[in-house]
Image (cartoon, rainbow, N blue to C red):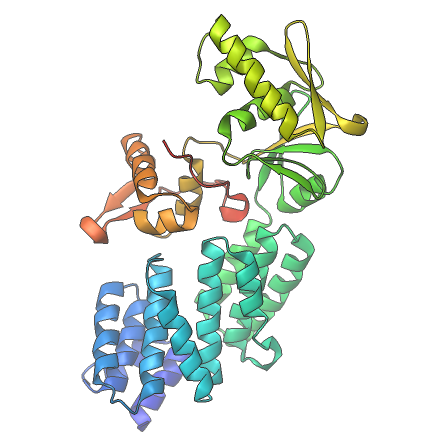
Length: 406
């Protein structure tokens, strides 16, 4: 590596993008192309960055496997930031393997962190934790140590382990401060601020109040019966009854829970579960069938008793019943929750992250766009979707289940 390339690399590591660019702006050799690509990516010009990195990867010779692998890692980071979740993850895993085999420990660790962040976006927490466990955080320099701790915090937040999240964020803040890189320090603060924003809404006995993440964690461990409208399940401690694929049953469970300790009238249950239909005899018969199915599903946690006017939820052992809902409820709120991260998403990436079909997600986006709640730019495969700033809108901390197919 010549002195100019080495100087540009040092400036890039320090966050001095313009200084790095000045040293390689007029050069067309592979290392300079790669550095320019990384600088362009950090400046937000992703399309130019991808072109430069592909040019660099092709220009490196067959014996320069490490250099080509570094270009692949840089491309993967651009794909992650631009929410191109269809970018082949196997290419990143192969590049990490090449870097590890050639002793490039730091770039291999960076590749590992990118893999973990992608797994977090699509909700594969166990896989993310396993992959992250293969990295020795203590041996990493401050920038990579901060990235490692941020990934740990992301897993802890999604699993509602707030004490672990706070501890890892403290370590991430310390590591980021040692780097002096403003963008990295801002990223840590953004994640830390999520713990101070509402993560859920408690509905109980006719009242509502917002909950922080640690309060949600305490609620789920408290022993009450929780109808969880964030993940579409009924739960009591470790016992859970998922109703993700049975929206009618979940709607009935929520309506009964909101009416507890009283009963929910038959007309209200029919209107909620069957899209506002009137309570005629056919829908009363269908309601009895669905209540029977719900009673069978939640039998370990609660019973459902018929009353003069409707049905009432009767929890086991005289426990309390509450509803845990997202802080803000919108139709297609799961799509809005992902877009609320401020990044521009493609519909295909949203489908991957939500575990839904592209057609279902596109219908949701079209409906939200018609209502003026999302905006798009670009055409065809380059089309991206964004959301106006919504103060206090829930992040992906408590993302619900996949969209129901319609």
